[in-house]
Figure (cartoon, rainbow, N blue to C red):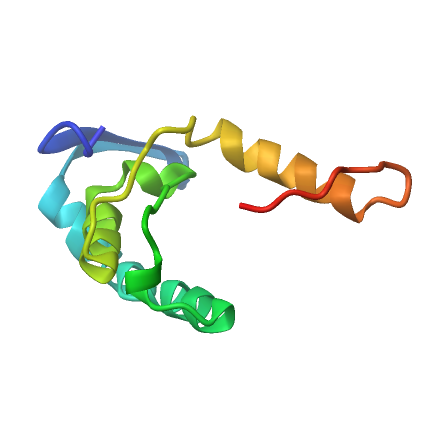
Length: 118
């Protein structure tokens, strides 16, 4: 909800001693609280490029998938890193499950999967 709105409802049931917490959280507050995690986003990007032997100039398109694709702060980090806006053309949640299923089929001795390049 914070991706489209400046603030969103916050509901935590049974946080402690059967107490429920309800309120609102602003995007800036969420990003401040998330800062220790957000600073770690760039590391895997750098590692993936290094292991592939590529630079950001070699990457023509970036597709963002999973729940992180809905977090504006993550999109900004990725945009700044690659110097281009990431695309969101796939179903962010479904494509992760499909990728996992494909990888399982590739690794399975029972299934035969045609080789393909991305």
